Structure formats: C-alpha cells, structure tokens
Amino acid sequence: MQLAPLFPIIHPILKSAFPRCLWTGDVNRREIALTFDDGPHNRHTLELLKVLDITEIKASFFWLGCCVERHPEIAKAVCDRGHGIGLHGYQHISFPKLKPQELKQSLEDTQKAISKACDLEPKLIRDVRPPNGFFTPKTLELLKQWEYRPVMWSVVPEDWVRPGVSTVVSRVVQQTVNGSIIVLHDGYCGGEDVAAAAAKIIPLLQDKGYNFVSIEQLWQQVKN
Image (cartoon, rainbow, N blue to C red):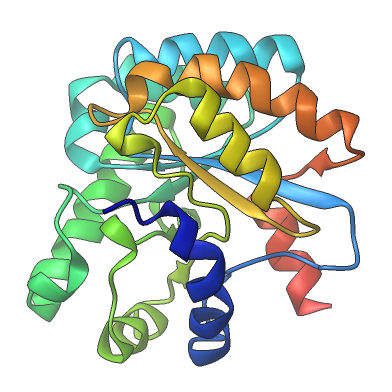
C-alpha cells in the first residue's frame, strides 16, 4: 500500500494534535524548505550537493550519527556550504522504541559526531527529526526537557520506496504550498534518485514563485 497519497490528509490532523513540532512555516509566505534525511552518504549526498551548488539554494540535512562518523569529510562539505544541520538519531531507530536514556545518548552521540566532523558547538545542533516520523507525547516532553526542537514535514513523496523520479517530482510539486517542509532522502534507502529528483523539483517550484529557506528561518517565522 502506498502511503504518499494519505500524507496530505493526515498532516493537518498531526499538526493540530502536536503544535510544538515544526510542521510548516508561515502559510502566508511563498517560502518553503527542502530537507534531506538519513545521510550523509558517500555517493548520494555528493551528487545532491552538486545540484544544490548549481541551483544556489540552502537545504537542511537531518543526519544519522553513525553515517557522520563513517563519512565525516562529506558532513564537513555540507556544513561548509552553509546548509542547515539537524539530528536524526545515531542509528535509524524509531524513538518510541528507545528508553529515555538510550534516546538521550543517541542524540548526544550524534551531536558529538557532527561537532567533530564540522567543528560546530554540540549544543547549537538542536533540531531533531524522528526516524520514520514516529514519536509519542512522552518523546516530545523529553525533547523539550533536553532543549531540542522537533522538526517534522508536510510534503512526503515516499521516495524511499523508489517509485521513480517522475513520481517523486509530481508528488512534491502537487503537494507543495506556502510554508511546506519537503522531505527527501539521501541515505541508503531512496538516495539513489535524490539528486535527479532535486534537480527537477527545485526549478519547477521556483517557477511557481516559491523561495527556498532554511529550517531556522521557518522557526523564526512561527515565533513571530
């Protein structure tokens, strides 16, 4: 069963139920965010960076700590270009499956890996996206207690099952509205097509008048 068609229906319900997560930016602004999960990857991420360099937009990456430790030079290349960096856990394990101390350790280990690779202050890396988008009210309480900021999404083309570049592009373009947070994947699942998809998505959305902004900029919008 393909879940992508259901996400636009489910999203408003989740956004209303869990308002402390960042689900979208300002719906009155023609601004959107492009985000990538599961990296960095030694091939997929590098191919994606070429696209982002050519199009001159800034994206936001949510990384697995184990992948950062595997490819620190790629993490550094992403960071040096000014893209946003967030946490996706040390390994791709749904947060509700982890005990509180295990979750805390997973996030701290990922912070440390990014800090070492990118020369960033660990405590400045506060944005967290739960693997698979799974969390509970308890998860959110813990993230707030530990001073992390949960970041979700509003456009999910289900690229990890590799439905084809044209399908991914079509889903993103059709579902994107003001304030959308688009999620694609540059890791081992779905990353094979990420550069090709991004190369088509970016100009199509720019032609529709959208400006790409960072997750940090979206946080500032919802605060004001």
